Image (tube, rainbow, N blue to C red; front, side, top):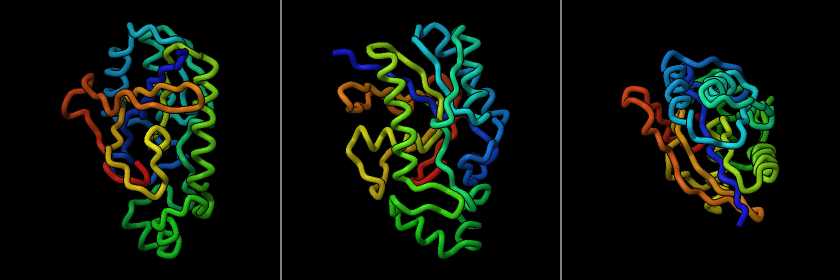
Length: 216
């Protein structure tokens, strides 16, 4: 069997993560905690011996990945298809602000219709096709090896759903955790989850958890 192992990492914490603001493709920087998380990741993966390192081109993921690259002495390849789902008019707002300012659009979004696009955003189905298609390409490119991918919460959500046959409307039973290690195997067009939410490299006060089902 020539399955590829993918260590998929959610970027370090940002201020908007802490404030529970919808980030999407808004290019928010790492917080102080996020930078500490990135350093811990770099130390954890320094001697891992993975074959390649990929990242979203948004700075919160790219800057997390750069620290890993420095520790592991690997080149970093960015790909815009690994960025978070685009949420248009919702970006920068908390859940309460979205409900107040855009009640009709929020109701459509909350219905979890996989084809619905928030104005200025993209549908869940289109997003899943984009990000999973990219990661499958990476897995095929490095067949049988181990690869690190630094990306975003809903990319991890999409991978989890693909591995468990969980559709977009179903609740996700596990949280999204900043700077966590999540291991997936890919082969024969199928995903298999091997480890979720490993944060043993983080101090207790560095763990940032999101337990919702839509965004982080």
